[in-house]
Amino acid sequence: MASARLDLDGNPIKPITICMIGAGGFIGSHLCEKLMNETPHKVFALDVYNDKIKHLLEPDTLPWAGRIQFHRLNIKHDSRLEGLIKIADLTINLAAICTPADYNTRPLDTIYSNFIDALPVVKYCSENNKRLIHFSTCEVYGKTIGSFLPKDSALRQDPAYYVLKEDESPCIFGSIEKQRWSYACAKQLIERLIYAEGAENGLEFTIVRPFNWIGPRMDFIPGIDGPSEGVPRVLACFSNNLLRGEPLKLVDGGQSQRTFVYIKDAIEAVLLMIENPARANGQIFNVGNPNNEVTVRQLAEMMSQVYSKVSGEAPLEKPTIDVSSKEFYGEGYDDSDKRIPDMTIINRQLGWNPKTSLWDLLESTLTYQHRTYAEAIKKVIAKPVAS
Ligand SMILES: NC(=O)c1ccc[n+]([C@@H]2O[C@H](COP(=O)([O-])OP(=O)(O)OC[C@H]3O[C@@H](n4cnc5c(N)ncnc54)[C@H](O)[C@@H]3O)[C@@H](O)[C@H]2O)c1
Ligand SMILES: O=c1ccn([C@@H]2O[C@H](COP(=O)(O)OP(=O)(O)O[C@H]3OC[C@@H](O)[C@H](O)[C@H]3O)[C@@H](O)[C@H]2O)c(=O)[nH]1
Image 1: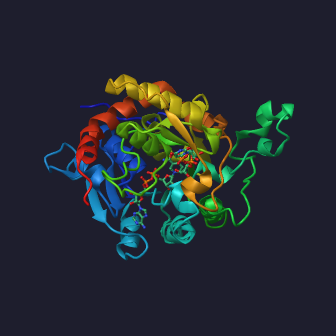
Image 2: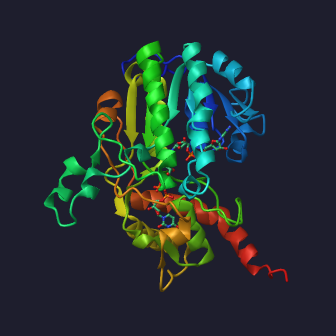
């Protein structure tokens, strides 16, 4: 008999049933895969789409058949939601509009999706005494304190002015006409509501703040498995440019900084939260890789090099072009300047650390992108344009 799986305190882990909302998305697909491959837990996978988890649902001879059940539903208006939360032990809410191109162009949908639509989920968990793991974002920190200092101030180099700490850092957003912040603000308010449900009504919750998780199946490639005019997050934008042999577009000079973490490292952290409720309840966790910091320009350069290695194609002579944010995203765009997660709390509670370097995670991700999309792109490019 296989030995019992133990939690971080040495107690056997009991199989549970998880109601995962937004399970058909990028993070959800990796989390479902991990839960099916490595744990005995059951999953109700709720989403409006299931393309990214089809390989886990069919055929029904898969070793985990019966442990994952897909429910096609929109949480905006579906009475089945409460029933599913009630019969599960834990709810994980991933559902959201979470691509920056939408924040300033579809601010109402963004606010509804990230705040209003999440309200019933919190309410049903609280009323039925069910544990909730809610996905927020690193964007709740907004801009760093350091970004307001004079450009030549030595304090800009002091981590006290830029490292983002769950229990200390303020949330700093732009003015209301900078609609970019509609997303961060809605996420902040739902965090505050969940925290208040914990304080006043005893809701058992964990809030996750992902810092740019990237990897296979993130977003879509415009014109292949998503709308031609769609603007996904940066990994898919740059992948699309590389696949088409076009220069990568640097918004406002590509000076913003990000830390990227490999999806498979980040999913390990989520599994630890799921299986160690006593250590995760009542916590807000940064989940990122502080060692993988680059400017967007450096990311573009590294992706060009890695793509050339995995595809065997020579890099473009002019690998990037500059574009203004107004041209690329439209009116109301703004940006986070720098995002370094403090890792103290997740280290202390769960002993988690990211492992994969930026080069390595780009290599496995771009190998996937090339294998999945290169042929389809070639066909689209070869097609004569209809007159
Ligand atoms: N990927 C990241 O680096 C990152 C960073 C910060 C925060 N997050 C947060 O993590 C969560 C998941 O992100 P992701 O990258 O997997 O995004 P994603 O867009 O790939 O996944 C979200 C999923 O939710 C589903 N969904 C949205 N609205 C729904 C509704 N009303 N009913 C049912 N399903 C609905 C979508 O169909 C999609 O499959 C989001 O809450 C996002 O804000 C992600
Ligand atoms: O083609 C592109 C796309 C994006 N960019 C830039 O690349 C940076 C990263 O852009 P992304 O689209 O990945 O999104 P951001 O990192 O700004 O926000 C993301 O972070 C946290 C999550 O909540 C969301 O998934 C999303 O809001 C931004 O500075 C953006 O302006 C480009 O320079 N060129």
